[in-house]
Each structure stands twice: as C-alpha cells, then as structure tokens.
Image (cartoon, rainbow, N blue to C red; front, side, top):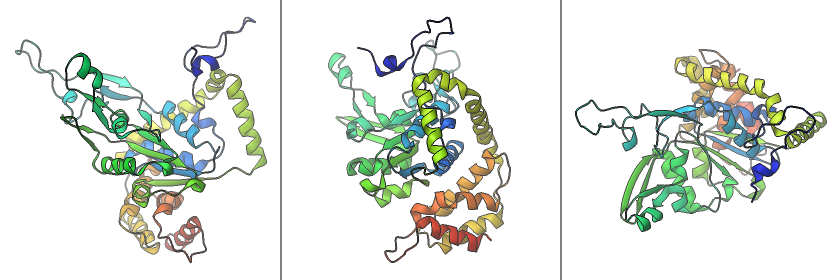
Length: 368
C-alpha cells in the first residue's frame, strides 16, 4: 500500500525536463510562512537558547501553528550523538547514560575508548493526545521478554525527545496524568521509570512546544508556567498577505520539491544565522542596568515567582545573539516582554485591558 509520502511525490517529467527528486516530500519551508512573526521569533529564540523553556502557541485553527513547528524541525542544524544511544546523548556527556561511558576493549589491555559519535538531526517528537503513559515514559520490552527471556527497557517518547523538541498539538486537551508526568520530567530533566521489576533513569531534556485553540479550553496553570514563552497568533486580516498565503500553498502542493528548492537559499541563510547565534550566546553580556529594568518590569506587573525575570533575561540574551550583538539592550527587552510575560500575569476579573496592552503600558513606564 502506498504511503502518503509516495502518493504526494511528483512523477518524473516526461517532456525532457529534469526529473523531480525522489524520497520523502520536504515539509513546507519555515522561511516561507507568511506573517506570524511572534510565533517564528519565539521558536527561533528557543533554538538559540533551549533553557528559555519552550513555547506555548495559542491561536485560531489554520494559522500555521503545526506547520511552523514541523518546518522548524527540518531546518535545525544537526547535532553530534553517541552511536546506538537511544537517548541521543552527546559524546561529551558526563556518563549519566551507560552508552556515553568509556568502552573497555575486549582484551582488557588497551586503554578504554570513547564511544563512537555520529551526526543526527535534532529530534522533534510529536506527543499524540491519546498516548498512554507507557508510550510516553517507556516500559518493559515485551518482545524481548517473550522471545529472549530478557528483562529490557523499551524507551518511550521522552527518550526520543532528549536534546530536541517535544511537540504537543492541542496541549490544552492533554489528559491530567500526562500533564503530571511532563511537569515532573520538565522540572528535573530526568525520566524515572519503575515498571514490572525494571528501574531506569535516563536523561530527558527537551524544549517543550505546545499549541492549542483558546476556544477549546484553558491550560492548567502549573503546565502553562513551565512554558518560557507564550505566542498568541490570530487569523491574518491583510488581504495581500492572505493572497500570498494561498499562492505559496498552491505552489507547494503542485511541486513541493521545486518549492523547497526555491526557498533553499533563504533557509540556509537562517540556518547559518542560528548557528552563529548559538556560538555567540555564551559571550553575550547582560549589563546590570538592563537587568534592573527587567526586575522592575516584573515588579510593576506583579509577576509571581522569579521565572519572569529568568525567562525575560534569557530570551533577551538570545535575541541579542541572534541579531549578532554581544550585549543586551533595553530594546531587546522591549521586543520580547509580551512573549515572556503574557502568561504570567495575575488574572483580575475586573481588569478590562488585554494582557498584551497591560504589558505594553508597563514597558512604556519602566523602560522609557
């Protein structure tokens, strides 16, 4: 039976033109998405600095939320990982995972060798709403238990997402027991599995990306707080942009290979910019005067806890790195304040202003 990929792949040209390449259909290019600047900036900043804590994307249906996340996966620079490690651990990992430890040669005389490293794409894993806890966390490998009599661990989605992205579409509809699991793992960066006599701990550090439609329900405050940034996107009302969306989508549907090739230079340019930002990030300075303004802004908005300052400072630093600067400016804070603080404001039923408007007003008063 033909897969969806095979069905969509263009047939070779019959008029002497260069045949279209075979293979998986490329995803819609990230750089070809029209508008939605807030969503794209939030995702890029989390790629530059994964410690920001991920992105929550709320918006109407059909506004390219899922398209943007899946397009981002195809654009990320590849990473080095230990060959055969089910958790994609880095070769320089500290031995927390058994696959990263020095390997003793069979004769026992030579010096232990470092594990072999390979280059892999950054993991981007979808967490479906109907997934069981065993599927998410991992469980006993039933096949090996039945065929070999071996008690072994079958890694779950959290293992596959280590060092990458875990994407949850319709995250506001996620079952409570899975939310509890995600909260525990996101806080510790470690997944602990106790099943059927096996006990496994493995690294599970990932960037959490969730999307949802606000009309379909709210997110639990504990989980919402775990997201570093909160992007809100709406249906585009500019007629020219809407026409451009249709034109690009028709071109992609007609020939996804040619469409991806047409955007290849733009994609490569953004990839280089992200890689340079990742290298520059440790050198970017956050001056004390800017840090004081960040703290004043959080006090002004009565943000509970201190995740507001932490996220705002990390995101502003990532933005400076992405734009090729070695020092954070007040303007960086101004640009990402809404993204970092929108979901951290106290809900006042008597407040008539939108959250974004409240933040803009506070920004004007504190950062003026």
